[in-house]
Length: 499
Figure 1 (cartoon, rainbow, N blue to C red):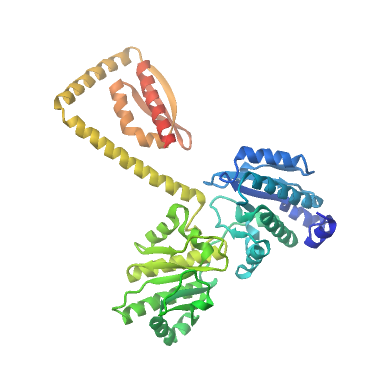
Figure 2 (cartoon, rainbow, N blue to C red; figure 1 turned 135 degrees about the vertical axis):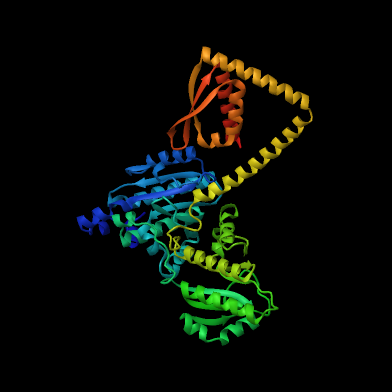
């Protein structure tokens, strides 16, 4: 990178040296440029080799994998390019460019990477009404999305997708803007705050039949009561991917989120009262690049919204193409009047959350709390399925056993004899050992384990916790029987891991 270009971008050593020593010390951490990339784009070992290769070519303090920035529940690798010297920023950018080129050689021309930035810089990067981030996307021809805040993760992830040279231009532009603004320690300390529905001004657009929109606009008292502005818009004014019917129109409401939500409650109740024979749904106009976010991993986000709305049906009418910047899609809500209202209020809150980068609700929690929670939800669904399979298989076993009552009695007699004889042996010559077992495994096999212990004459006792998610089991009995129990535990653990 030439000196003229560096000066134009505000990245030269001269522009940085003009800062006071105190300001430089507060801004020192900005030169720790952090990233996260998923394993589906490159494996950890491959990335490690690339970083070592690039480190040998550039005079930078550190280019390395960074486990401290591992995003919870997301399979991938974090890495950092670190140097506290102002004059090395251009070298850091050149190193990033080289890393991206090498990743592109190993994968398809298009991939995505997450740039990790301090929480305090999020609103600045997004800009007023998202203008700044839209300009970055248009200028660099990339898809740039500020992801929701992640629970117990201090940095905010910014997804950048496109070709390697375009991704680099976006990273360079973001770094340039953050450099011009300056980054302080306070930016790293700041955490995401809940959205205040009473302060955030929003523009909401809903699709209804023409006769319904005309009826609503005639009720001027709604604007005064809820301090908002209402007007009708046709589909030609808004680039919606789903074509509207000839007798449909868009109702636009502008005001604080709280007032808009209250107004929609009143509007929908009036419609249901005035047009009793008319079966209508609520369709919310939403930016198309929010579609996959609203749906969530394996649909967990939209299911959670439907559950909170007590059974409303929510459907995103989109092909989930996040790259459609400037395009809009529809979110359809079906159900009883109250269920539709509850679902619509939650959807509007969530859309506003996406516009502002993530945090919502008075409680400070997040509707899609974090990647890890989505991962746990998907795992819990799998666990339910496996338990159902186990219950069905165990019932078939019970049916098979009931066919032969004589065998059943014989087995009981044999078990009782072996148990009594084993108990006598334990008293004469007991063998004791311990095994550390994951708690989730104990929950899965507890009944079978107790039954096996009785059959083998092994006394099994739960001891103290080794770690938060592990338990110490104490075994006492004959050595070979204790080994049988241990072998069963290890076998079941392997089965669960394979699943």
